[in-house]
Length: 415
Image (tube, rainbow, N blue to C red; front, side, top):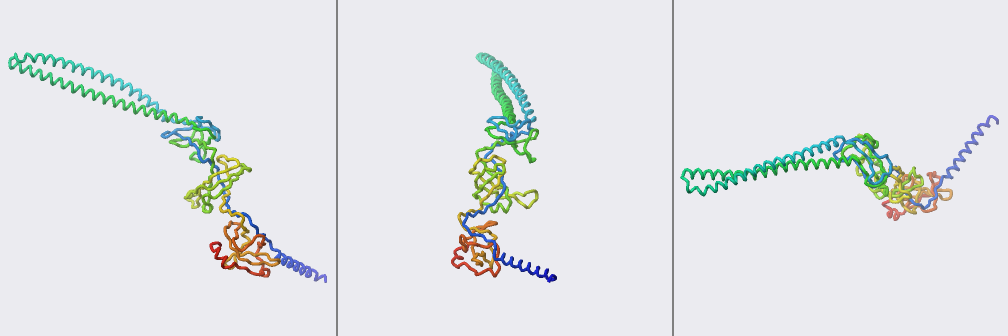
């Protein structure tokens, strides 16, 4: 008897084990069907940004170095200096233009004086010729009393005087035109220098960058990937400071290609913030980038930029705040929703196992919208029925129920 004791114990344990397993098979985990709201959503990170922002940059055609810039995140008032840029080449051009203008103005005065002198001398010659002409005309009265030779000489003298008169008058007119042309050329040079000085002065004034509105200033991003700082080289419109409009915010989302395909414009979005645990905000998808960008050079993996609005919020979040974005892909109110794990494939149809006392009924169902974990049942199940999470053994399946042709026809577009 003692020798058979281990064998008897083993048999007893095996019997007990099989008995437990048999009981476990009958006591499958059950889900009670209820009506609830169905949501298919996607959670993705986002970054809060201002909808509008005033950007201040280096004046055009300038190239210099930052000698002063406002602290990042500092509050500035209207007309306050936010950045100062030193452009030595521009300052040199401005100083040279001032010297050239002064020289040109002196040259203009000198030219005017010389031209006035020439014109005065020419006028004197014309007047002198006019007097000689008058004298010659007086002498012409006596021509008829002169001998033919003397008369001929006198006529030639009168002709010479007349020619000289016309010559001087023509020269005087030409001198006036020449003088006017010389003056215009110098005046044009002065005007060009004046415009250059005005333009350079405006650029120099622009190197002292002032805000045009009050708000929280943030330094712009440098091409190297960090924010600009004192000593950085900036040029031709390069941004140095941004002042966002804090009354309206949006969220920038960087999504993978698969996530981007699932998201549509006007999808509702709910926001939560790790830095503001009690804060919530709501908005919608505004637009999606039509073309993705590689995550790095020569990579085939692309990311897509998505913009979402913030329409309401308990507290409006500030810029550069990270947020968890719950994008609602689908929402159906008060409908039958069951876990995906309770749905099984049987002969190309979807079925669930409905508990009927100690047995189960295999029942065909039709599902509608679904997510990774849950699915909406549009036909085949009723509220408060109980379904199994595990497929029962064949000995526990009492019967099979298929949907009628009319039901299948009604929901032919559903799965």
